[in-house]
Amino acid sequence: MTTTPSLGSSRRVVVKIGSALLVDQESGELKHRWLEELVADVAALKARQKDVLIVSSGAIAVGRRLLGYGGRALRLEEKQAAAACGQVKLAHAYQDVLSRHRIMAAQILLTFDDTESRRRYLNARSTINTLLSAGAVPVINENDTVATQEIRFGDNDRLAARVAGMMSADVLVLLSDVDGLYTADPRIDPSARWIERVDALTSEIDAMAGRTRSSDASGGMITKLAAARIALGAGCHMVIAKGAVDRPLSAIEQGARSTWFVAGASPLAARKQWIVNTLKPRGALIIDAGAASALKQGRSLLPAGVKGVEGDFMRGDAVSLRRPDGAEAGRGLVAYSASDAKLIIGHKTGEIEPILGYRGRDEMIHRDDLVLFE
Ligand code: GLU
Image (cartoon, rainbow, N blue to C red; front, side, top):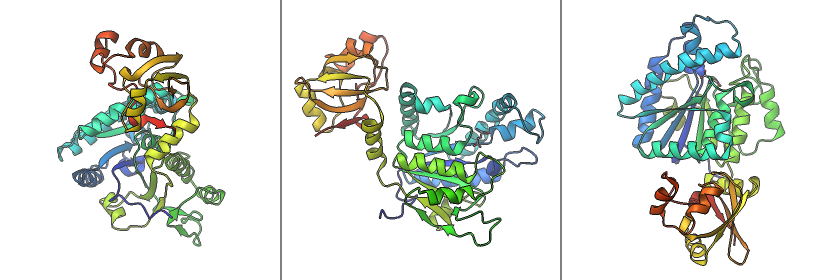
């Protein structure tokens, strides 16, 4: 059994914050004091060299009051209008509080498509990686204003899990109004037992969530288990903990009651499995012997080592790597479309920009996006 994961041993953490923690449901005002506590914890994690990403709800809850909608049920377009107004205020609050710790806030608004479609996925991933290496804290929400019913996540639990998977995070923290998973809803059933740790998402675990009452479909235990499934599949551990306490992340580290969902594989191993087992190759790159041995030493694939391009693929698609004798040497996510790849193969990295007219990635396939076969 894997040892119990912890925030202390993590390298990259995604923290999901629900509306109820951040916004006073009556007045629609942001809870600044709570935000300050949370951000103090975020700053402390960053001081320990951990990357932190925040997935925050609250845009609609803030915006509905700004637009005078009160507490009534909203139509989709009213929610989207509310999100447009509320998100500005939300982002400003994060910027303000993070800047007191000299941390830059970066707003990222995503739709389901951005984490699903290969090309956008690579873009979002590398932009967020760039922000993290610059020391910023990405503050992420769903792009509610443009997302239509079909392309919405609709709940930030699953969005946060997708982000955690996309960014190869090792821990996803869901700050919630409950302190973990119980065998039944503890507010209704006094015999409900707390579950300390979950290693496999069995039907028995699903049944526990089904027994949890939730007035609001988003944010209930069912979406949290859906998030766990996504996170664990990506090799990311997940913890559900109570958010409405001072310094909620420190509380987890100090042993406050919470439920850990433990991933079996590491994020990198899970990502490589996904590349090989889930994605269908859209084409092939023929590599030369020099490239084949460089890859074996753990290097990325550069355009100079590619001799031929087959198939019609887009940037971000999976492709096969083939040796000159035709054997498949591995698979990876390619950083250029087939048509651009054809123009730059055999060339040095410095020649990419003059040839294509834009400065793309140095690598044809980055080593993190590459799986070699024996
Ligand atoms: N994106 C929504 C908002 O910011 C929240 C969705 C959710 O809470 O799950 O208001």
